[in-house]
Amino acid sequence: QVQLVESGGGLVQPGGSLRLSCAASGTIFSIYAMGWYRQAPGKQRELVATITRGSNTNYADSVKGRFTISRDNAKNSVYLQMDSLKPEDTAVYYCNAQRVHTPTLLAGDYWGQGTQVTVSS
Image 1 (cartoon, rainbow, N blue to C red):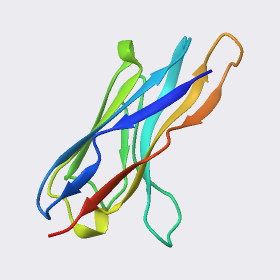
Image 2 (cartoon, rainbow, N blue to C red):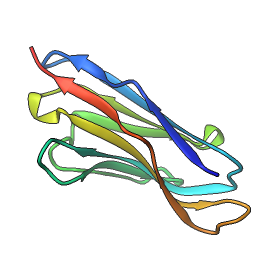
Image 3 (cartoon, rainbow, N blue to C red):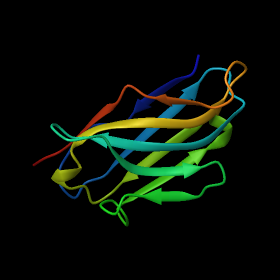
């Protein structure tokens, strides 16, 4: 069974930085893409950033130039460096792994439990 465990959320002042981490555990042969999504109160979950196994990245327009996604394929981990944070970045951030190849499933999708990021003075 694949599990995604996030860490690194918290409370930060506007203009500050946070680094989110997510590690996938279990017997995993490969992961095509990993990414971060977020959901603010009363809003739908939205894409923040994704990165493929080959390091191709995609960012939401709202975070371009402020957030940086990276991954460590050997550790089945993905990271999100968030700089110049704004109050509108406040949300629960979810880690996602797409097309995960395991001994029992060729291409499964998995989600983490979420980590709260609050940007406030």
